[in-house]
Image (cartoon, rainbow, N blue to C red; front, side):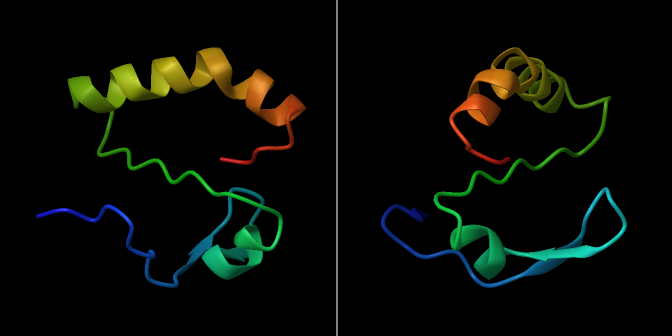
Length: 66
């Protein structure tokens, strides 16, 4: 199964600030990266989050929101 060159379905999630955020709202500001984290017990997820934490500030400086 490939999702290459396909649009993501619209979704709305609760934000860490307590409000809601939708994919459509974030796309108005530019490209969007969505991270899926199954939990601290998932070694792949832990590695992905570690890598993200290493580049998050640089992404923020470029106004890329994750």
